Length: 317
Image (cartoon, rainbow, N blue to C red; front, side, top):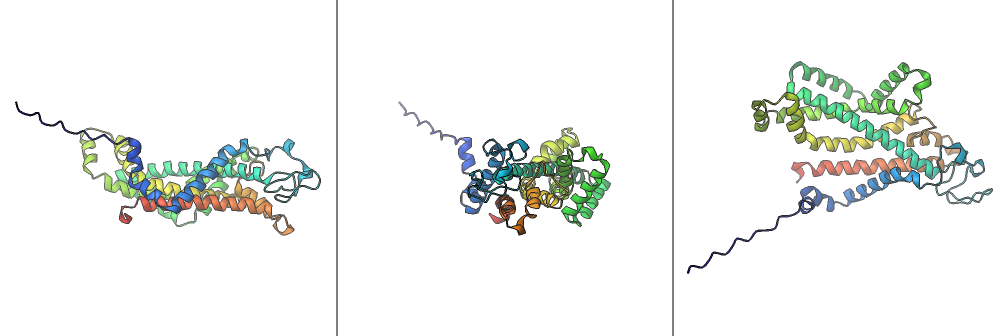
């Protein structure tokens, strides 16, 4: 009798989690202390802004929750009248600055994330159309983008915000401020996405898989959405991460200039604008803690975006 050949050994397939953990991106992240620290800070601050309002001592913008006797309490020092202690101190109205910073961070993150999403969708759509169809459409979109990029983003945002406020009735302006800020900041940053996506689309549209999709009868919209867009998401993700930090700073700048969020719904920029009025009278904490929060938040997100850009760059591998 002939011996039966040994059955082939079937190697166990790696799980999706192991493949993800062993990927180049995760490996680069695990070996980058700056990326780990910036990611932890970003998660901590974003998570604190989302769930913090449920744990802070008070709603800082509810007049019924404030006690004027707690006004101007120094950080960590018991108030001389009520004996209450506030970690970040209080302002003249007795508003707990820790609670105000948490609520302000929440507003700043909302404006920053929504404006980045708006500018990304708008810029990616125009970039895909310009790169895929070319011709006059490409020329018009790219010339508008070139003109916009020749001006600072803050000036574009101020122009859009000012024009929009001139159209909206005065009684509705305060309630529409959040929406106007998102649109103004979004319209000031779409050009970067459009130029990047247009360049990537010019390369991708001549690839074999796009030609095959055309031959199979797919429409131009389907080709852009299902074939080209997934292959240009890498640089889009990097730009969006970096622009989130820039959008938060831009919103803070607008609010500091007095054309952003109102004091009844303040962002970090509004708190900084209010705090600088008390800086030279000795109440330094009213300015310091919102400013430090803004700096740490923007720096952490920016460093994370810089790492992501380097990690996705094949020339640096």
